[in-house]
Length: 237
Image (cartoon, helix red, strand yellow):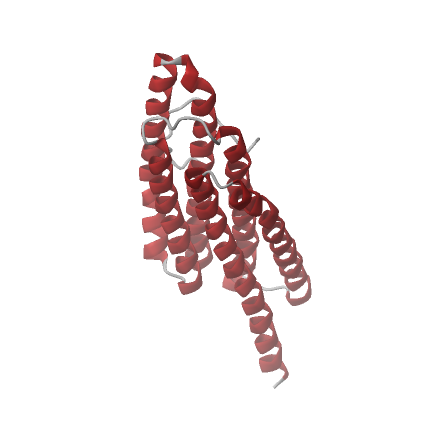
């Protein structure tokens, strides 16, 4: 009876942590969507809301990591239970970074507001964001469902997200070279695109954690990237 009680308590604690992860994922998806929508609409109030709401994502990350660390210390789990806890901490960190990237996009809305759009770039950013959000949603579903096949599908899609970024980058570069008046807006749009591309990387990292959790197969450190630009960025604004 005592053993069953311990296991049941562990499962409840783990489920509570996973519920927070899913809530955090939902907030991250909304932040990405709203940040780009604020750009399209020129809605500075919406952009500011995205920036403010990032604090809730950060707070959940701290709660998840603290709860996971406590669970590790008190339960000393082994095998798949240990992998689940380690994975949840990594996934939480990825979601926190996605929230940061959404905030960085929102911070640039005011800088670009009122400037002439470059060759339909806002629509391209929206489509790229929708694609990455679908990756993130499927990555989180694969985690909850322990669905390795879906997780591998998300990982495979990262190359397409990179290609979308590369195409937009080249288009922006062409327009900046052709008309110097496009340079300021083009740079802001490029940084926004890069942040979205990095969100795709983190969605892929979440999918890879699912694979690790279920199979014990560690994510490859040398996962090939289709991003051919020289620029690297960790969300600096």
